[in-house]
Length: 173
Image (cartoon, rainbow, N blue to C red; front, side, top):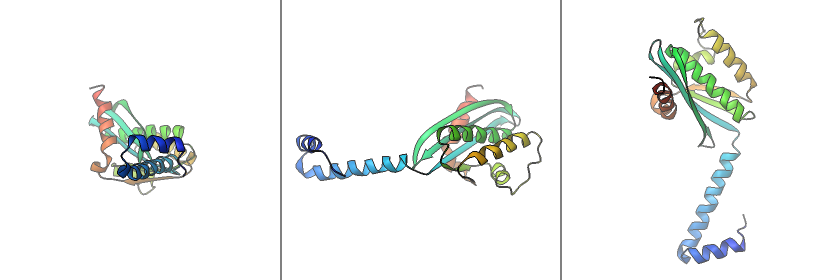
């Protein structure tokens, strides 16, 4: 990576000589991080849904990370739903947004709902008639993606999505 003469002169004028190399090294490192994030082949999507009461006031939230950096986030109020419906609706919201923003990237999804994760992975059957249509739509969405995987995480590892889901519920409570 070549630094232009104009930039070298600006560095020499603004930064003490003993700090110049450190400044250049930091600038190059930050530039590489931005380049890596912008060119990542995969996004990580953290999703959470919830309800206050079961059924009750429901909402969901998500954060999409590309190259370790938050690239997009969102939340939505879902009305009166069960907790499981809210989890599924949050996943649908997140995957729709992910596909709209990053249609050519693989998606690695994380949720703290073990039920949704196990059902999406085919380990549990979807018996609920209220969840089945959303599950089937999610199957269609995931088939549109370049790649899809979903894993269970503990609530502590899903803080942003949890906060966004609560903010969505707060908007209507």
